[in-house]
Amino acid sequence: MTQTGRLLPLVALLLLLGGAGEKRSSYDDASPQTRAMQDDDAANPGFLWVQQGQALWSQQAGPENRSCATCHGEAPSTMAGVAARYPAHDPALGRPLTLDGRIRQCRVDRQGAPDLAPDSDALLALSAWVGLQSRGRPIAVDGDGPARPFLDAGRRVFETRMGQLNLSCSQCHDGLAGQRLAGSVIPQGHPTGYPQYRLEWQAMGSLHRRIRNCTTGVRAAPFAPDDPDLVNLMLFLGWRANGLPLEVPAVRP
Image (tube, one colour):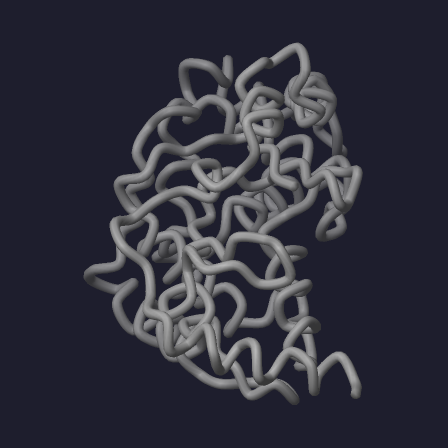
């Protein structure tokens, strides 16, 4: 029997067992060893990227030799609370931007520097450095006003079945959250710690990378990094996690 054939009966059984309870981070489902690694800044591997991001923050680039600090000053004061609000609607663009998208936009439009590739170490590092300044603050993604149509579009993506397994994000992360699949706890899917260091990757990764793992796991075509459906989904996921504390840089199995 194929892997798909083995998974389908197991998923069907789990769907009958009920869904998630109160809102919780996947930190709560991690092993004590993984939680301890996240909690200790000296042991958390994500801080290798944080340190790189701190250096990049003051690194000049572009024809006018601007750095992030040129416009924004010292990150611990000016960036406090910023990451907790992303993805956020951009009035000038008329659509939402992720934090990674905002960093890339600033680099190109404000610094006149070459764009940073999605999931590149430099982009992950800057995102981790900015995210750290909001660690412990409650996620507060705005889904009202001009963001509402994009939030609703993201909800539709979350609830749409896809791939050869014909599963939606909602079926796993609402209907099956807290159950076990192949020995691992199925999380509620709240993006509380991105970019995060995953032990299975042995590297830092973005929310896009994690979603890509999920879509390929259900045998669906992955989203391109700038796909509007992906950004809308991220907006919905962030809004869905509102109230949970930001954990950047998180550590997960």
